[in-house]
Image 1 (spheres, rainbow, N blue to C red):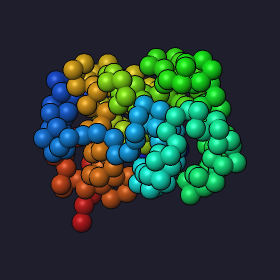
Image 2 (cartoon, rainbow, N blue to C red):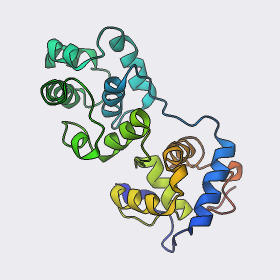
Image 3 (cartoon, helix red, strand yellow):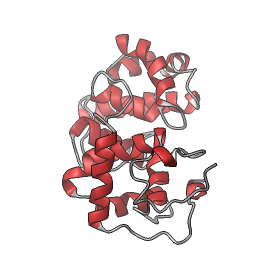
Amino acid sequence: DWSSDVCSSDLMHLNKSKASQLIKLLNISIKNPKTSLKFKNKFTLLTSVMLSAQCTDVNVNKVTKNIYRNYYKPKHFVDLGINKIKNLIKKIGLFNTKAKNLYYLSKILIKKYNGKVPNKFEELILLPGVGRKTANVVLNVAFNKPTIAVDTHVFRVSIRTGLSDGKNPEQVENQLLGILPKKNIKKAHHLILLHGRYICKARNPLCKKCIINKICLYKRSEE
């Protein structure tokens, strides 16, 4: 439930200068913000992001480490077939569905895009197993586009800080795109996500260690 992390009913939008300040502070505390997923090319990035749905990046990296040595093109996965793909990714949650998606996605990439990953949101979102989050991560990381992918971490931090009062990922994404400085958007995605993963955690957020706690709207009682 996306709304479960909403911790205050009186959230207000941060103005643009405050949003800019928040990103500057996160930039100080987080060095070299980037995706923690390991990949070999644009296709394996797409694959890893898709596999990471409801699964940790650490687990995905552990599984794909061996896969990408031999299989890193759409043709490889089409040749493998669904059952062999299932066998390769069986330690990842929802592996049955993800194996089918990976197989059919690979077929479409070969047939429609000459084996290449498309660089348009509207085309990515139509691929099997690819939602808004996956499409935006691929555009951000592989094609250097200023996109915001809203996962649970980005959603939580955006609501708690008051960057957004959106009720779902798409609303939060649109509000962040409207309030964050254009030049910072690409980096902001990773800064907010990593801050949510390591500091502004769902349970027991580390508010005392938080670099943005003075401008954050989230208040919690600490022992």
